[in-house]
Length: 112
Image (cartoon, rainbow, N blue to C red):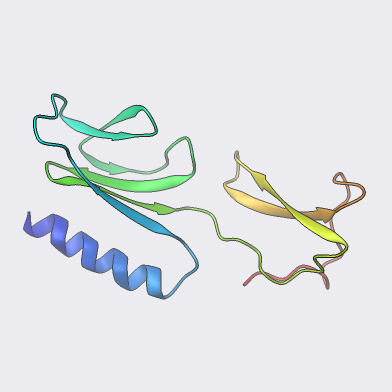
């Protein structure tokens, strides 16, 4: 329990310094598995480097804490460009609205 609490404090500090979103969930009483469930999949106890939905997580007997691996680009010309999530890289591409195969110019898209 102490290690999970220390993990939560460390993740809280990390979240305040970044755009990544974190979520914690407690295990339900009587949970029959040695692991934690996220989006219908059971993950083992310990550190999970990457889930199918682009989060890194820590699972222990009391619950699961997950933080996003992706950071959303916030500075781009919204009238000309749009964001597309790339699940393989766990990040966003900024592309032309009228032609998603064409990236926006670099002066239009800046990471925030």
